[in-house]
Image (cartoon, rainbow, N blue to C red; front, side):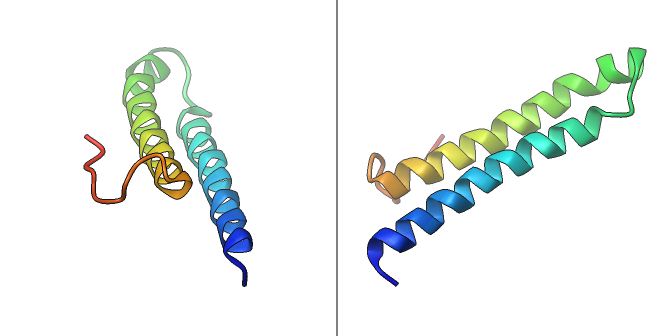
Length: 73
């Protein structure tokens, strides 16, 4: 496998992780209504944002924008 193919595969995995994170957010809130939704949404949003932040950090490492050894927070 070439380095370019491996990089493309990693980017495809990252894209899939983004879709999965949004799907989990949607599924977490899907059946909630009214106050249940109001109560649950901030936590669900925070979890989604944490996950997306981690994914963005992985993408930055892959692109070489951030060295792997730098803490993300």
